[in-house]
Image (cartoon, rainbow, N blue to C red; front, top):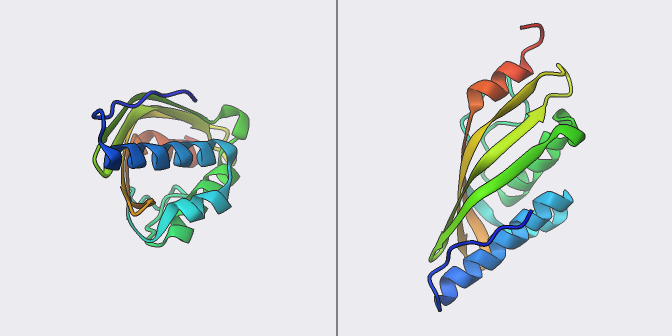
Length: 148
């Protein structure tokens, strides 16, 4: 995944944010949960709409729980079908926003999902303190329900 974020020139806080978010993306791509735990703060402002039919979507509040979401996702989605692309990567101070597309196939049902996403991350003291993900939760939920 190659992304060139837009960052105000010469802003050391924004550069630090961009670096941590780059590490976050690399850790996600590598499936390195240990690295993700290091990148998340001990307490994380986590927002991802709770959905009882999607096993990997649930409330989280610690760095370890946030990092575990990525392992849980890989347990439930066919790895060969999991895709994400980033169209836009904006950085302003401690905040980063990524826009893109994601898709995958739920292992238990064989059904696919896809749609746009927006991810807002906040980096403070070199660690991610906010992870707010907005995605096509209807498509994902439908893919998790057998037989429809």
